[in-house]
Image: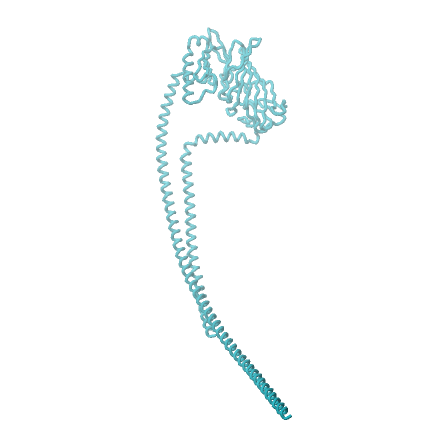
Length: 551
């Protein structure tokens, strides 16, 4: 009991000491938590400062780039924005479908694909009549077909559907809107998107003399005034010759047929595919299909010129059309040959082959007609003017490039200085922030490591002491229990052995004595009986002998 009391006292003392040490530990943890909170708060503030400074630097750099490129792109962006804005504004206007003819631009619901144009030109009264078949595609559903016309008398209009069920579509009404030079065809039902339709229009008009559209020009030959009819569609005057989508964005292919008096010849962009003579002395020339192009590139002419031709190395036929006396005198030979040289030079220089099979040059006395084919190289024919303009352009380009280079160098140096200062300040700020954050992180890590190591060592020591004391107590208890068990077992075995020996000896002695007594008694009895029997026998024999003897 004394040992157990001492152990209990020691156990209570150790547990009390451990409890005291555990009471002190939360105070240290509270201090470390306070320090950690301050460090975490400082680290968070540093991160936020770095993010704000980086965002400001990015905004400043973007602003600097915008300011640098604003001067060079302001004009182009402004014009493009105005163009796109006006186009989009017209496209998205709420009233476009209600009254599309009131807008300056054509609606985007339809897109032309091919024109089949047949004209009959009367050079006696300067009139012409025509018929045009326009194949177009419907992009957005609409009930209105809006075409450009100017000074044209429309006689007949028919709209056809080219879908699986072809047929004539009913027209609700048709009218000319002179405010925007358009002709409007309103249908009873809508045109379906992604389908192809055709519109056939028959018209008449005058061959004007204002040098626009399809007009007439004159010249003197042998004291006689002669006339010819030519076209000038650039920029927006094809509408004076036939109904069309007269905007450069609407490109399509063209097939032209010209009917006129047989004393005249006719020209167009493409070569003559077929020529048919009529009984009335008129001739109809059918021209080949043109490439896809805008309306202002289309051209034709009706005249009584003669021509001289040459062929380039690439197979392009160049013809110079002029008065017969000018052709006979060779007045156009220089223009013809210089055109050939220029065309070959341009093909070799730009590495682009001329896209048409022929090139017709037709001088016009009253105006310079420059179209896709007829006057493609007229400016290049006048060599002196071309060289003079080229020299002026080169001089202007050199001066302009010199001024641009000087301005660019000044702006570049200024931008470099500003960029360098900005980058230097940005680098300084970033370096300072990085060093500050690095120092904060290092300080935080060191304090954290020190605090963690101290707490770890303290916890290890306390744990080690506790485990050591616990192990000592357990070992002492085990040894005590083992000693007690051994002592108890020894005493028990000793008592058992003593008891067993005593009982064994006692039983042995008792058994031995009993056996000895029994054996002694048995031997005694046996000896006494034997002696008695022997004595009795001897006595009996003696008596018998004595008796026998006596008898």
